[in-house]
Image (cartoon, rainbow, N blue to C red; front, side):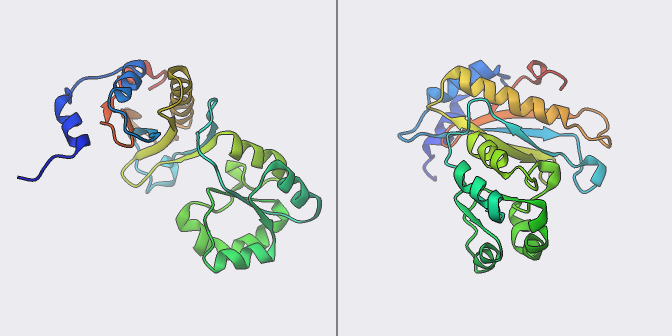
Length: 230
């Protein structure tokens, strides 16, 4: 018989049907923490079929407590906008040179931002950035004349959420080293943003299941009655 992993043993000890408040879930995850600073994640199962355009759920939200992650940002800009992006903390700023760099496979970025006048250049990277979810989009605020603010938002805890094929959204909400209040604030920010992003084509129950987990911890079901508008 195969030996159970530490995480499997933890899961086996828990009541799989129990519904937790977010406070109880955070407390439970802390009792099973690993030797490194684990990422805490939320998963939301939604009553949508993202194959239909009117059921797509996607957006941006600023986590009040930040992500605990060093976010790498690339910016397509020239002149004063390039200077502002650099001053705001962008990791890489350029134009055609940045495009060529990305075409060569250098795509180690969490966010790509562009000024509107650079979209002719960025457009050539559709097949490269698109599959990674990095293509700048005006609806998400990543195509903007105010690159300075966009970089600050990305570095300061703004995250993108996007529903996957099976109607699920996954998002990190911080590190286990965060305080209970910080993790709870981030949880409430992301869940409420997703509730507000309910698409017109969604029929029936929108939020069907919510769970919270840590890198090495168990997945804990959250009582969705605690999520306003769910």
